[in-house]
Image (cartoon, rainbow over all chains, first blue to last red; front, side, top):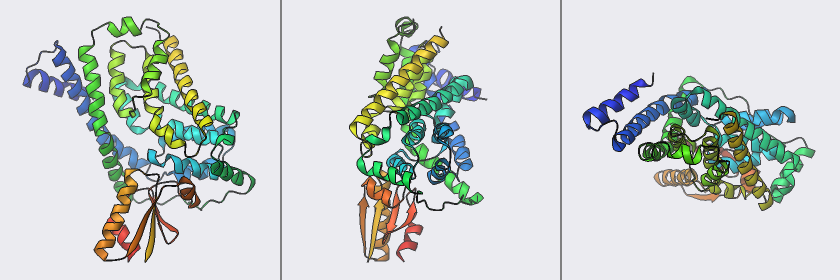
Length: 329
Length: 77
């Protein structure tokens, strides 16, 4: 069903502009036109549909649900809800405090917050359309695992002792008393309200990500057309162990969201960059960004913040190495 | 005189929320004091998890998105 975008790019680039398919410019422009038209069409339809389905899900309901669950399944549930619950990244701190003051362990809260930037409907959609369902499934599973394992680790080291004092106090109060929570009933959402929510979400998300689509696809197209065939494979795809940690470190200052980085991943994979290295680069770019970490300083002490950062970098590196071993060329 | 607080950790949506309230208040010629509250501890105290949220005379009236002008009118009348 996606061939229509290839045909459109063929028509525009080769026939209308008269560029030849085997030139650098023609190749890069074709990649750009095909991917941007495909991505925007899909985003428009899918964000609306997904928002329509999840209109009645919100962080308040997730908190009440998680607070009533056993710790053992809490990590997995926290991580999974992190993937599907809509919330703006500028709400991370209030969400963290809301969960903590409801007595939800720090590890489960962090499983929720770590998975959230890694997996969202836009990321899954782009992966599906650009890299196929197998890669998408793998990515989602790895994202959830990173959240779960990270969460368990944070509780094992008793991360709550390194929260800012007011947050630690709120957590202890909740643990010793029955937590005070508003009665949040499942909101009844009418068809019209669903439509309004879905329309607002579509406008909001598209308004936020459109420039990333152009930047990401632009970079991807540049790589596609101008990096010589075989260069990546020879220099980075020949079992060099250091390519994974290097990809993780490179991803840190590149602050981007999934929308921007996935078209770059597509291009890197096509050029022969190993799967694990590509995954590690993507996750590091999306989830290990300084601006968001600095925000967490409001609720965590430096020591915990540094531990969390190191933990993320190590787990992305591990993901990269494991996948490179499992899927050699 | 209504004391209105906009709760939020300082993203653009919170600024826009405060602007909408001030604009509607001017149109209705109602006197209001709009304050932005960015302290996470205070936000937690109101039990708010989705920002931007709006507090009028110490009661949370709205949370999770930028309010529409219609909604703001209803609070101010």
